[in-house]
Amino acid sequence: MARGWIILLIGVQIIFAQTQNAEQIITQANSLYNNGRYAQAILLYRKAEERGANPVATSFNTANSLFQLNKLPEAAAAYRKAVNFSDGEFAPALANLAAVLYRIGEYPESIAAYRRALSLDPSNASAWIYLSEAYQKTGDNVGALAAIEKARQIDSTDVSLVYQQSEIHIAMEEFEAAANLIRRAYLKNSEETDFLTYLGDIHRLNKNFPASIAAYREAIAIKPRDKELLYKLADCLAEDQKPYLAIDVLNQIVQMDSNFTDASIFLGNLAFETGWLDRAENAYLLAGRHGNKEAIYGLQNIVYEYIQKKRKTEAKQTIEKIFKLYPENKELKAEFSSVLEE
Image (tube, rainbow, N blue to C red; front, side):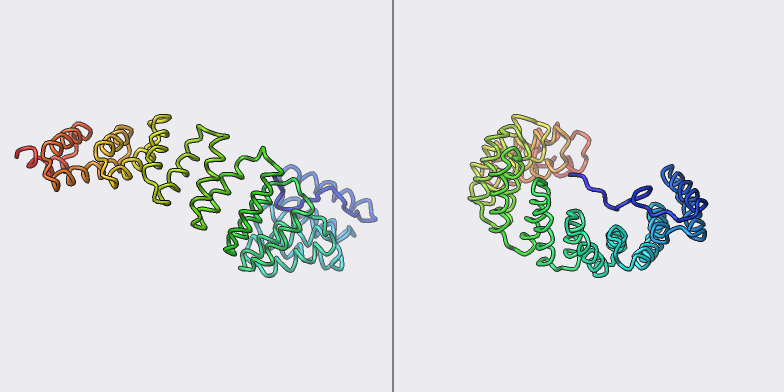
């Protein structure tokens, strides 16, 4: 769900001055603001205040204009004026002040301002979210967790908040709590299949490879041609010391898309490590034909492996394939020409 980063109340809930002149000036300033002429709007807001316009409104809208001009310290000062003129009772000014303080890296002050704003308007889900982010910046994951839980209580339909809360649990190394949160969310939102992929990622971070593999397979049952998801599964299988299963998955990927050269290289590496040199060679050649520069190193390793095993015929055959694939590479020719001459 998209959220506005800064609260803008131009033309909304503004208390006009009692004098007609001040009101007319405010109207002109709002028009300038809405047309992107922020510097001119600032001049008129200040003029309106001199004519008796409500200083909360003029300070607040001046701050909004300064924010649009990316003059953040000046905007913060103007929001503080609006807060002071309202005796600390204007929640939008406090929320905007907190947002600007966050933007300039004043995280403790931002937290204090958000808390003051939320004491006036505790139903502001966005403010709870930003408060959570500010807590994370200070390393206070407990405070961040409490704030994001408040946001979820207010807006239980926003699945992005589930991910944010899970990230906080992960930062606290509470992997099981993160996984349980995602699983419960998936049961309530079965259309959000990305939950399953994320669940696999969480288990993998926790080195719980069987659980990670199970989650990825559950996701693949729904999206069987998702190459990135299959790659994650192959990577996790390799981590779990199941190279042959990983090779099967990688082979499935390259058959789907021969341009997915990372899968070809990975396939080559696993095949090489398991001594399956002919399959490794084919995988590296496929990657090389599609422009992956890492293929050359894998092919070189195969040649050296053949030489070490005194399998000169296979070594020469592989070298000839390398030369055909890289006809302009003089370093390779200098490196292997002597082998061909033997």
